[in-house]
Length: 72
Image (cartoon, rainbow, N blue to C red; front, side, top):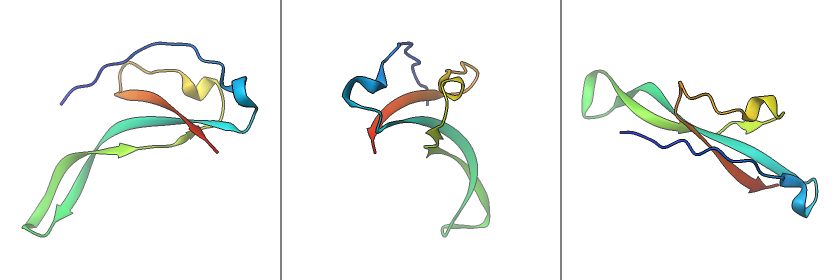
């Protein structure tokens, strides 16, 4: 599994201030599955926290992340 990290700048106030920014990241989690009752398995899951400030929207190249614009 791999990802690509594009860099761009976007003015989200183009259609008003009711927009929100959402960060989509891949996270490694231990997940229990019915077919593997003896132990948890590691898998990748998507996490989607809402970005509250411009500082939180910075792309950290050490982790897998991409930005998604969502209307509130």
